[in-house]
Image 1 (tube, rainbow, N blue to C red):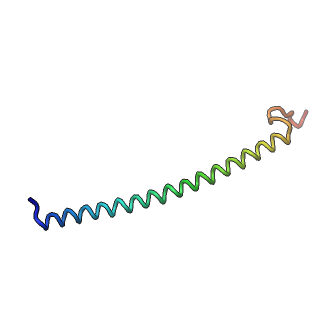
Image 2 (cartoon, helix red, strand yellow; image 1 turned 120 degrees about the horizontal axis):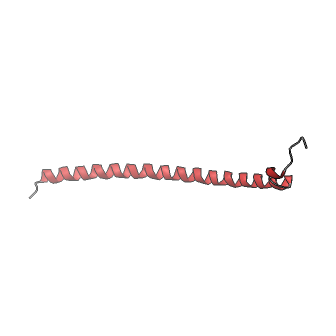
Length: 72
């Protein structure tokens, strides 16, 4: 059977472990939210770039491979 001192020590250890895990979880959550924001920004940027490429390709009338060099 455990004494009162042993139970108190075990409880203290468990409380410290819980506090560390809680801090780690908060840090992971902040990191995840930051990465989600970066992914959202990159997705928006990619969509804008795709629109720009389509606009340029549509304005030229074909792909750059279809164009004749300037000396012809």
